[in-house]
Image 1 (cartoon, rainbow, N blue to C red):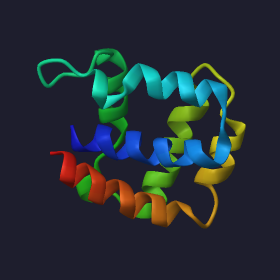
Image 2: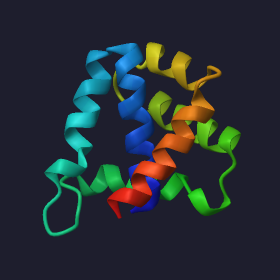
Image 3: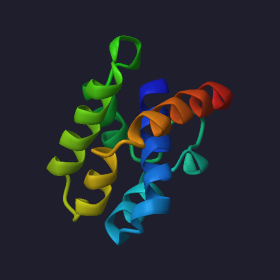
Image 4: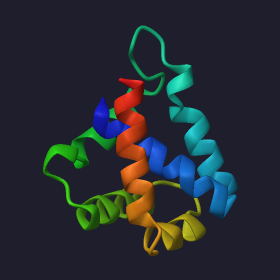
Length: 105
């Protein structure tokens, strides 16, 4: 669950910079606010994210690559988001995401 939240929070912060419609749709599909009984509404998406991310062993650069790889594999145009993920602000987003996910859990 923590892995999933970290990815979600990073993408949520990217949204403020990118304003991509496809990212907005993705976030709406996987938003923790839509969870019921402690499970995400889109379990397939959750399982896909969880299968590629392991925050316990993850460096900032590996997290950056994993999220970028996942977005590249999804339907949708995430060009602006991918440029933000590849930028210097990513480490800040990553640390904020870890902090926010710990508060949420």
